[in-house]
Amino acid sequence: MTTITLARELEASAQTGLHFAVDPHDRERYRRLREIAAELLADASGLTTDEVLGWSAAEFGYATPKVDVRAFVLSDDGLLLVREDSDEGRWTLPGGWADVNESPSEAVVREVREESGYEVETRGLLGVLDRSRQGHLPAFPYHVYKLFFHCTITGGAPRPTAESSESGFFAIDALPTLSESRVLPAQLLRFHAAVRAGDRTAAYD
Image 1 (cartoon, helix red, strand yellow):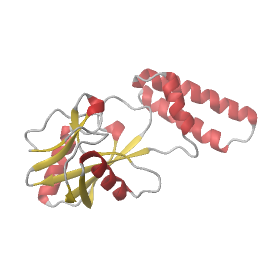
Image 2 (image 1 turned 90 degrees about the horizontal axis):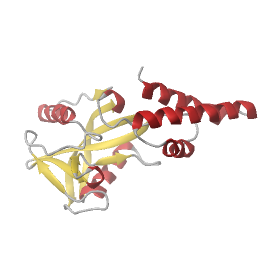
Image 3 (image 1 turned 90 degrees about the vertical axis):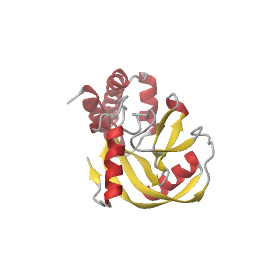
């Protein structure tokens, strides 16, 4: 196992322990484990220890992966991408973190609206992928599942938003520079082939 994988497991154990532990000595031990995990995660991810501890303090309950949703919207004009100003203007599939009290499909519809101005409906699930096994960089201090949905446009219009400066449609063989923290070229090629072939088998892991 890599350092970041072990550190994530250590942090998850500390979080879960703090949720269930009652004895004050046990709770102090779990707090110390969380501090150690934060130092390791900071070294592996490029964040500061305080940043990791701040994220950890906001988590509670049994530790589980975070959920990132992405929309694969393919039209006659090409594949819909949005420009991420937070990542040096690179491009990605519209999407982001799922919110509490949203279903995954509701989350991805909201994200497309917020990032591009388009209204979409989901047509199917293309993949559920473990971010840490896909080669995304930089490494995150937390564990993430990425859900990719095939979507079609039902309305709306392109507009700049608070989260992205523009959106556009691109041919699969003429993609712009991608935000590989969010999506990888191989993933787009895989999903493009699946949609074109009408393959409804979702990729996983």
